[in-house]
Length: 113
Image 1 (cartoon, one colour):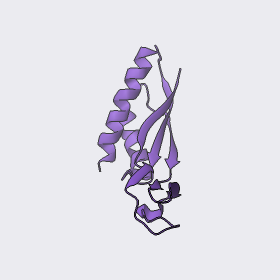
Image 2 (image 1 turned 90 degrees about the horizontal axis):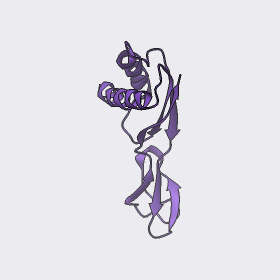
Image 3 (image 1 turned 120 degrees about the vertical axis):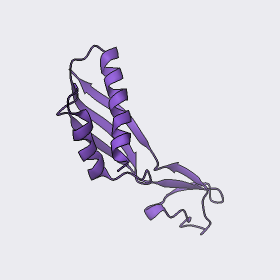
Image 4 (image 1 turned 30 degrees about the horizontal axis):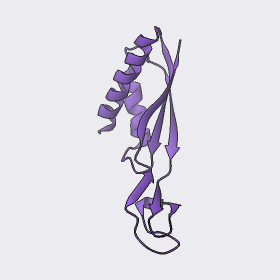
């Protein structure tokens, strides 16, 4: 379960930011997760509980902002939804080689006390 190592990296970033801001507690962590990031959300939630235990983030809320995959068609010069990882342009049928979004895994915000 690579979600544990991913959440471990999130913990390090969160604790570093909390220390920089003099926070005594982290009450919420918000992550942006792309549909093609290869992350199982429920496994990430479980990892959050395990990894944050014993830290100032123990018991914090994990909020997930889901990001749908989107490609850009070079021929049509238009973005389109890449459903199920399929990068075939619905207008012209060409395969896009440019993914605009969908692979994100970013710490976007923390609620600190």
